[in-house]
Length: 335
Image (cartoon, rainbow, N blue to C red):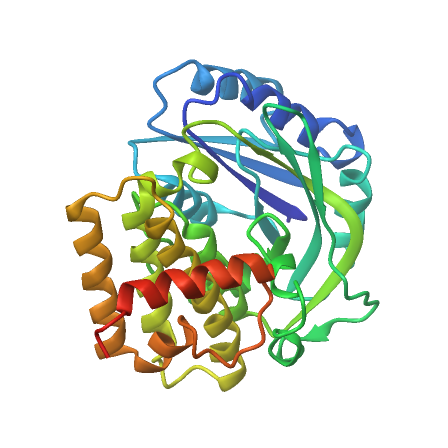
């Protein structure tokens, strides 16, 4: 059995896919231990051709899936479905792994017992090449129970250390909750991925090493300027998370963790609308409808999203104030 399956969702990234694959294959000592599943999500450029060229060179380590376009979640679904490694993680095709640490990371996974392995993430900006490191603050030698995440979820920045890019999870565990997988043709499914990982895992361990290199700044990405363009997808994932918190079969500590995701996404959601320089009537009504839905179906979150929240904040105080003012402005005169 392979130690690690790396799912690489790919859509028209001919400029970046070689860098991604070269980083994964840089160390000859790990080539036989990893399985790289490149999922071409209906690519129309030469990226599929590049992936097949690498597959020909590394037939025992690279699998290429060519499917019709279904979005990032669809590509991840296809990869997880066929993964054969004991652990699985996602590396987007325009990102790469840190060659200084990847070999040691794979070596440690060989004897690892934890359900989740958390590693550091380094984010690099496209236009100015500036970098920002996301380092997990909790050091551990033995696996830490997931309940501890719920206990510490209100601590500054704690939750931000858990992301699709920082998490490696046991494949058999993830499949227990995969069901229909991630939402298709939808951005922001990384939040759904995190929720599913927490749903299946009992413990986690942290490796104090940077593994993931996250490349941000391309116009088509859902982050930055492209965020509001995909705001409807953001709401779709948010509604999925809200519904998840109603599942009576899930333990309370899990609901506490997902609640943190919901709160963070709610504040981002409202602020994204209000900060638009020119908000159309259609978009304004879209937000008003969502606000009414939240008040009716999830009154607790309705209050937590606004100025009455008593939950300790893990976001920047300026951001918190702007979000609160935005929600207060929207609801003014309604209550």
